[in-house]
Amino acid sequence: MKKIKILKASIYFSIDILLGTSILILMIDLLELLGGNDGIFETLHPYWISVGCILLIKALFSGQADLIEHYAGFDITERMRHKMIEKLKSYSLGFYTQERIGELSTIIHKDVDTIELVAAHLWSRMLGDIIVTIALGGFLLFTNWQMFIAMILLLPIGVFSLLKGIQRNLELEKDTKEEQMTMVSLFVEYTKGIPLLKAYQNDVGFEQKISNSAKLFGEKSKNIATHVALYIGKYNICLELSYGFMLLVGVLGLIQGYATLTEFLLFSMVSKEFYKPFSALESSFLNYVKAEESYTRIAKLLESPSITDSNFKPVFENFDIQYKNMMFSYGKDFSMHNLSTSIKTGQKIALVGPSGSGKTTFSQLLLRFYDVNEGSITIGNHDIRNIKYDYLLQHISIVMQNITLFNDTILENIRIANPDATRDQIIDATKKAMIHDFITSLPDGYDTILSENGSNLSGGQKQRLSIARALIKDAPIVILDEATSNVDPINERKIQTAISNLSIGRTVLIIAHNLNTIKHVDNILVFQDGQIVESGCFNNLLTNNQLFAQLYNSQTMAKNWMIS
Image (cartoon, rainbow, N blue to C red; front, side):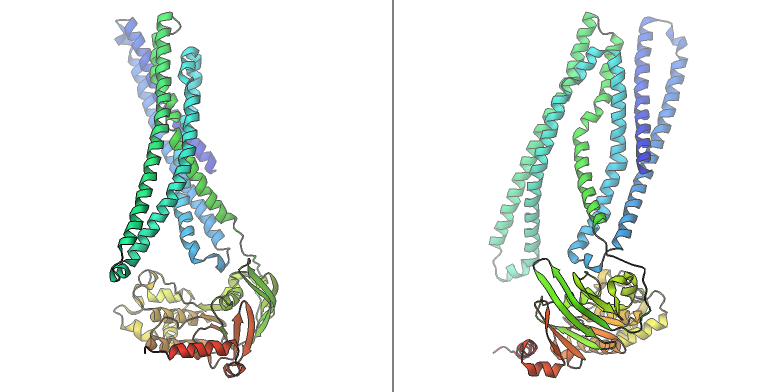
């Protein structure tokens, strides 16, 4: 349907141009009549009527073409964005890494807009110009083949040189973009590091690096500008020479008798419309390259593998979690082999270990950020891969280190976890999350609008709002990822109380670095290099004097450290 609309707009644009050209032909015909008859003024009425009718029809086709191309453009953007949104909903949570957010934003906004601009607007007009060129070319060839041959004789040479120039220019631009990225990175790094550089009075060396990078980028940009000027200049000379050569052949035709004055005037005026697609060839080709790059990124997004889903929604008799002979790997960098463990309903389990040991991956596999390579993970004896993905996530709440808050009221930010929650239920959840008193101290209370990502809140306040979300969701399984990290002692105590309230009657997985906070959990799983190397209660693990004891002793020594 979109292709038909674009083609229809192109045909209407070509009719619009051809009607404008027909007025020129009428005027030439009229000049010929005026030159041959002194009393012709009495018979001009049909011409004026014809011109008026042509102008009216031309306006109608032009307006209709504009309308159709805009509708086609809106249709393209609506369909593509809808298709991408539906596709995005089919990905696992692991797809949405921080590195992807900027890329996704660029694809959904910039790349879709590029496709819409090029496909619906630029290409419809370009296709219209090509139709006009073909129509006028046939007409001019039929009118005078000698002048037509002269008109197109140098075009192949010009087009060949233009395409070679564009190809070389794209190579130069790629090299220049890399230098631009280096320069921008240095500027950003310098801006962020100004306080440090000022403090150490050592910004001269960095300024020199930026200056050298900017100079190199400037030189490469000048090379591109010079190259563009050369190949565009050569191409324009070919076009002008083609036009001039045609006029020369036309003049010779007038002298030798193989061209009439009418034919000469016709070629000299109408050929400008014939040359229009050739004049716009460079921009058309660059638009094609731009659209191809955008389409490649969009296609990559749409063709990315979705998570395998089903419609199975089991009625859970319990929420026992089992990892059975589970194997998982990130290529060659990280792997888990034959990992097996079980977590009973209502247990509080701590996951500890050095950075990169696998504790976060362990919890992410339960959320199906990724699927295991071998073995299985079950909840209530149901393989999580066989459970409808959204239904699985309904039974798990997450309190992360990095909290996402939206530019909306505090009430609606909490209600995201449960759209059906009443105001009284949300207030009850905030009281348990130890954030109610703070909210009511604000002038607008629960109707306070949060700034983007809650930048007007402290880290501890964000964490307690996140816990309130988990409480209002009321999922039977909770994952806490370093919920008390990077907060002050007062907020930490409140968060600990909130977590205690959240943990009542739920199965809880706690990813913890502060080992003092997990003394009373039911079981501790100690990870190293993707394996569970120890498990047990706090006191037993200390007595074993293995990895957990080493981590605890190191942390205690670090906590007791003071400046001598």
